[in-house]
Image (cartoon, rainbow, N blue to C red; front, side, top):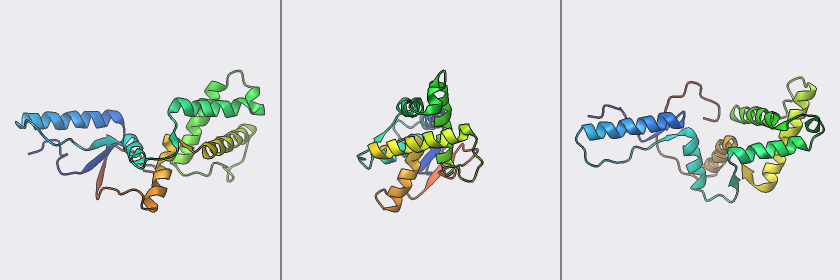
Length: 178
């Protein structure tokens, strides 16, 4: 009997890497305690790792930017802007803009924010985000936050086959992308 509850679940997606590792260890320890000498690998991954592995399996022509590359892109865009040149340090602004851009993508919010009143800071962000979006498209780059939208397109085009069932564990708030 499996005391972890993971046998027979198929693919298990967790909210983060730490939970994924913990479940993998628990599964292996349980199998060992049952006297098993060998056992099938538990198919447990974080949602982030799962989406990256699905995307890589398509042999994409574009590049997935890592977080440092993505931050450098935002910083480059901000440094070239009028408001950015007035900043003492654009690095923390780039970090904030990157987080805000990721939230817009994750929750499916229009980056133009046309439904919201614009302060000068909001207008600067909208311009920076448009420049980042343009550069990503021009270079055939994607980011981890945009990966789910890219995968949805590939799934719709039937270029990716999904497993029949996926269990999601540890998610307190499920975003529209998930």
